[in-house]
Amino acid sequence: MKRIIALTLFLCCFSFNFCFANDEPDAGDVDEPQTTQSTAEDNEEEESERTVLFVSAHQDDETLSGISIILDHLKKGDDVYVMLVSNGANSVYREKTSYSKSQFTAVRDREFKSALGAMGVKSDHIIIPSSRTEDGKASQETSKIKTMLTDFCSNHDNILLYTNSPEVYGVSSVHADHVAIGGVASDLYKQGYFDEYRCYIDPYFINKFSMYQHDFHTVRTTNKAVVNKCYDAYVEIGRHSVPNYFAGLMKDPVNYYYIYRGDKVVRFAGATRYETASLSAEYFVSKS
Image (cartoon, rainbow, N blue to C red; front, side, top):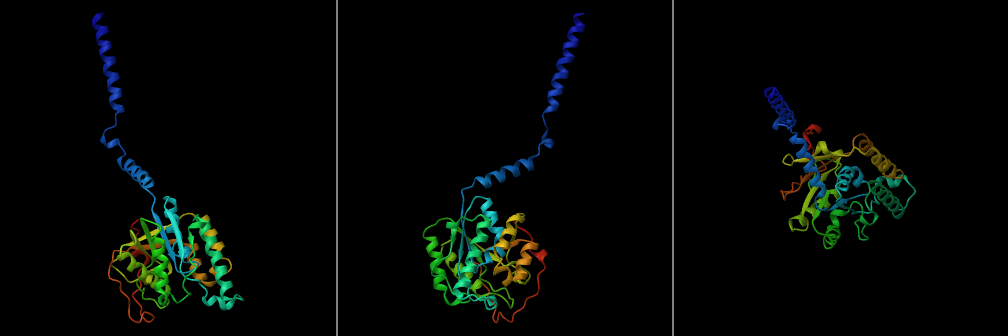
């Protein structure tokens, strides 16, 4: 009888240990990638916020070329500022309206502020300098651009800067204001004014951009509600001035940029006549 009791107790203990041993996951049962990914995302959110300055040449560039970039930084908790460089008064669309130059600028400024408000940019982070450049003449007023940017730097640290690329894209419709702003920014970056400099490429020029040595990053928002609000913000001038560009925004609100590392800037002679081999959209693989 004692032997039977002893054997029963032994079997019970063995079964108990066996069950708990099987509850311990082995190395193959632990979902390490998911844990690591979650930790990485948490750490990213916990990083100290950065000061981001997005420079827009005209009232609409911040939406057409920057909406996804701006929303991405806001989501990360960064301190996002948007600076408008020109008055946008010399758009060819103004001739189709009854507005004077000052009235046209005022309406465009209102659209600009409305779109940024829809994105969530604070009103006191929307910078419209009183000494901004005349639309189409940024290349002749680079000293103004330099003053705008250095003034901002004097009041902020750890700045991540976004401007149009300083490189001519090799397309007939490239805007000289965009290239001029990028040129000033690249010079200031080399002088140590900015912690990091990223050059964004207008989505409607992406297939014509010819600088193969860059690693392009793509940012694409899925927040259609905000995209729709920004589209609505440009109801008076913006989306009538460049309807095809706004149609592209509504179809796919994607933004492109590359990290500027002090590479030699290539400006093509006779840029208005220069055409490059078209690059397929697939070339610009997301590095983000």
